[in-house]
Length: 284
Image 1 (spheres, rainbow, N blue to C red):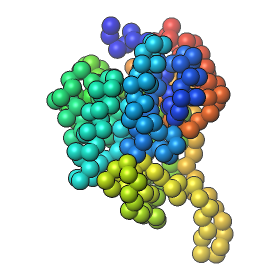
Image 2: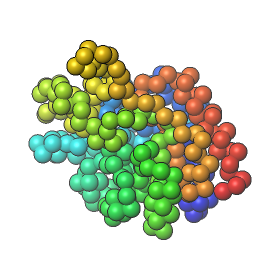
Image 3: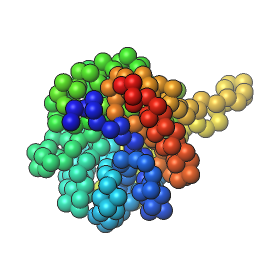
């Protein structure tokens, strides 16, 4: 089956087993989850490594896929620890890994060639060169930044399709006005502390790259020198109106961002996306 003929996918976040039970009844193809201490999410929205096998089994039972979101950049002293966690997750049933560390992607393909690599939003793919860099590493899918225009997404999608590599677009999530998604250093600039949580050798709390915890500095109340209050908040974006153009451009995978989202809101978003896809499928 060519990428053009492939059924459009909807991928949703999964933060706990209660949400999972609802996701399994939704019209989605896959969900992504994080392992405690190793993803960009609050610790309460991550799973223990010991839960991975159960997650994968439940997904398989309902003909869905469980994607491991391992999109941090481990420090030099954490590389072997990170690799050990990923390796254990693969042995427990993970077949697709979302990552932003090139070295980790290389290791996965060398040791487990059957595992699919998705270049994370954290990889910040903003050009054809970036996209083909990840294709060269063995990525089967590249997740593109919502900062890109439809024309840019179409160009990258067309170019990658010749190599059998898919693209994915986050259609709902948070788009910070101050940074490029995946490269926020504002939180760590204002407040970053060295911690030992027992989950990792080093935790730079406040660094959304290194520990998975962001203090959302950009969404706090700000005051200028005259004590005037103003907001520099990230905006929620909802790109449903761009979906027809993205479909025409060859995109066949759409992600909803926001672990911690209630299942009712998620179900509403999924329904809207699926209905829009069905409206447009006869034209692509």
